[in-house]
Amino acid sequence: MAIVDLVMPKMGESIMEATVLKWHKAPGDHVKMDETLLDIATDKVDSEVPSTTAGVITELLYKVNDVVPVGAVIARIDAGGAAQATVAAPTPQPAQNIPAPPVAAAVQYQAAPAPVVAASGGARFYSPLVLNIAGQEGVGMAELETIPGTGNEGRVTKKDILNYVANRGGAAAAPQATQPVAAPAPVAAAPVPAPAVQQAPAYVPAPSVAASGNVEIIEMDRMRKLIAEHMVRSKATSPHVTSFTEADVTNIVKWREKMKGPYEQKYGEKITYTPIFFEAIVNCIRKYPLINCSLDGDKIILKKDINIGMATALPSGNLIVPVIKNADTKNLLGLTKDVNALANAARNNKLKVDDTQGGTFTVTNVGTFGSLMGTPIINQPQVAILAVGVIKKRPVVMETADGDVIAIRHMMYLSLSYDHRIVDGSLGASFLTAVANELEAFDRNRDL
Image: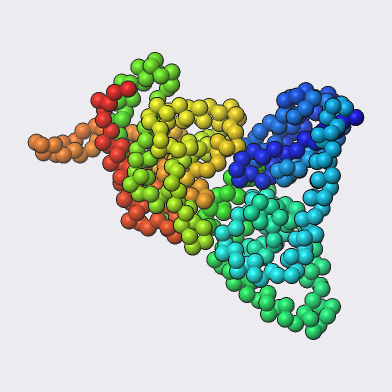
C-alpha cells in the first residue's frame, strides 16, 4: 500500500492559511487525479483543491471550518504500490513540524516579551482570524505584539495565539512563586502597554444585545464577518479624510453611446464606463505617485506598479475587490478585457486568490446603485480610494466665447478618501481635481 500525502497548496503570495469549507470525499471513497477533493476559503476567495493522485481516501486530517496552514497534510490517499518510494519521506514531517511551534512560542514569550514590542513598530501583520481570537480572549495589541510568530516572516498563526492563551495563566502565576526572581520582571514589562496608543486595536465584535419584538436574527456569513473586521481595522488604522469634486463627463457619455456597438463588434467586448475611468485614474497616478503607496511604521513604501482594485458587488450582497495588475501598461482595450473578465469571474464565484491580491489603489462605483456620491473606507494597506457617483443630466453654467450659457450636461460627483498620515489635503485635492480634468478632457472624436 502506497500512501500519498495531500498538502494544503500555496494559493497566493501572502496566503499562509486557508479554511476548509467542504469535503467532497470521505474516507474509503475513490478519487481520480485532478478531481476536486475539497473547497477552501482564503480571505474572501473560495477555491477548489484537486487531488494530486488517483486512489482511495484513507484519512481526512481536518474537519469543516478548520483553519489549515499552507503546506500542512490535509488528507492521505492510497495510490497503490508505485508511489511508495516517493511519499515515504514527507510522512513524518507534519509530526515534527506541527507540535514544535507551540513549545517554542511559549518559551520565547516568557524569555523576552519587551524587545519584541520595541522592534515591531506596529507594522506587524495579523490575519483576521488571529485578531478575532485575540479580541475574544481579551488580548490587546500591545500584548499581541509580544507573541513570537512561527509563520512566514514571523507572523502569528492560529496555533501561536491559541498556545499563548492556553499558557497565559501559567506564565502569570510563575513570578509569584519566587519573590526575589520575579521582582525585575514587572520593571521590564511595564513599558508594554504604552505603544498600544499608537496601534490599531484588534477587532472585537459588538456585545450581544437582547432582541425583543418582531425581529429576525440573521447570522453573518463568513465573508461578511471578514468585511466587518477589515472595515473596522481600516478606520482604526488610518485617519480618514474625504474630498469631493464633480466632473462633466458629457464627452465620455456621447462617445460611448456612439461607439459601444462598433466596439463590441470589432473587439468582442462590451465597453463600460469603468475602463475609461481607470485610464484617466492611471494617468493621474503617474502625476501624483504618492497616492500609490502604503505605510510601514514610519516608512513610506512607494509602489512602482499601478494595480487598480475595483470594488465589485456579489449576488449575495457582499463585496469583493479583484485587481487589475499593471494597469499602467494597458490601453483601453486591455483595461476593458480585464474589467469584464474579473467582473464576470466575481459574479460567478470563479475568482482566483491572486485576482484579489496586490492592489495599490481602489475604485468603487457607488453610482451603479444610484448614489450621487459616497465616503468610501480605505482598502488597507493602501492609502486612498476613489468613489464615482451616478451620472446625471443637470443644467450647468458653461463659459463660451459669446458669454456664459446654461446647458444640459452629464455630470458626475467624485470623492476621494485618503490616509491623512501620508496624503495631505493639498495632495488629495490636487489628485482628485486632476482626475476630474482628465475625464472632462476625453476626446469624443476618439477612434476605436
